[in-house]
Image (cartoon, rainbow, N blue to C red):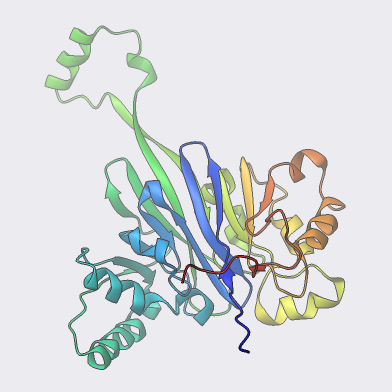
Length: 301
């Protein structure tokens, strides 16, 4: 008799206001987070099906658990008749990634189209007049970026607030700039990073939702965090000390520490009002270890 074992990967889905986060993140295994309403995916991971629907793929760095599915993302979109994905990535990684994708063209014997946009910190990518993506420098030991999704709003300058519509129209005809731009950081994604200046970046500090790794929680894993340039929970607490984020989502927890234990450790280190806005992406109802695998429901035959 042959025993069947079915492994169904669980993906998290969290809702914040008008947008959702869909994703999976386990340290060293896979990280992929999508915001469907904004047409953006942070890192392809191994490219689960949902990631294919985002036209914009924002690559943080070249480690395999974050970027392994990039070729599949582009190939499957082409196969399914979708437009080529636009890939933002660190400028220093562009040449190597282009070689990799061209090699996949040779392997597949098809001309899968792709569009790479090399980015440097502070260099905005304008999606629309009201939506820009701003890369920020992170600290992972080699080229790595985080990304902030920013809503750009046009506001009437205070000195003109009491004027009538007719008066405002006349000022416009005279060439007077009666509006100013207000930037509202919505989501900041930091990929993999150690403690550093990125956590004092105003856009990161003020983003409504911060997606931030915290890989290690055990005191004995402090050296592992330092060697891999990841955040240990002690670093994480320092990192968010001055943050103004409404929600902070913890990613990339190592399988060495169960989610329940990680939450217990963090709860002892944060004030209750701060802990209330911290969420673990992989915090399922039955979680034991980060990224639990559900073996209870077999797929349809």
